[in-house]
Length: 423
Image (cartoon, rainbow, N blue to C red; front, side, top):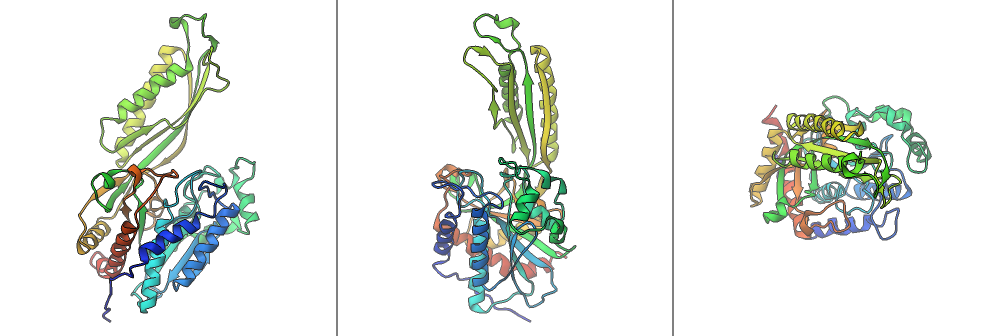
């Protein structure tokens, strides 16, 4: 059976996406800022609105045991492996309105356009609105995508939020059954591919005046919490050479992290938290607690850097007479985007008159979790305001939303041939 595709998009599709992004911003826990964490009333309200838009677009909708909202646009062959797309609808605290949500609302609008034309494909399309990616409330990221991938760790159900509520109890209060999480896992080989559209969350495309880019790989990450314990003392009476200053040890350590990660492309290291408990202006810091985040698209580079960093930490502490406690809190391997899917994105970019640009993602995404069960690919969309993200100043142009929709539709319309050419 041959299909005739119409790639022309209604002129309002970019505006529709942008309008809906702003409408979803009303589902927030804090007035005046965008905060929507897992299973809060704001989170549940956003889920309901997303489900309504999915139904309006011609999809059937289901929710799984972790709260993912999944819309299915049936194909001619209901038994064919699904082309899955989507992203997350939770946010960081005081974040932006485009992170995650673009990858949900864009395909919904595209599917609505096909539905109006009466167009179906040889395969089903599913839009997964993942319930949790950021890990803000329970310090456990990618809950929604891990559930679909079948890699959800039951131990995180015992994590507690700032009010002492366990994830297990929060799920039960929202009418989800933690005992049914395993049923959310996608059956083996049921996903032909997963593609995610996401704002870049960085300045590369903006600085090169490009609207879109194809992601090559998503960086792996290693995170630690570090506690340094020296000896507190009077700031005026202890000579410099006799001090065991935890803060100065932390400063030297942080500078080494910066130096070690500055000379390898795509390797980054960040000290994102730094506290001096019970510190005072006239007291030598006796204790410091700080975080460390090391990322790279190449796992070997990341692991080499973390080995050098931990070795240097021991040297610094020995020389300064400071004790260290280093605890690894999170680690995930990099996820390489499938070559054939990257080629598909590039072909769609070319057909739409776009410049070819490939780049890695330094930020983690739900696609990383899905990569364990299906080939993945990502399309980046340019950010404004210097590429800032996880920030109220996060922004995106309506023209870029429209162009990204055009490219996404073209990719899907050619996916069956692309898929058949690679199997």
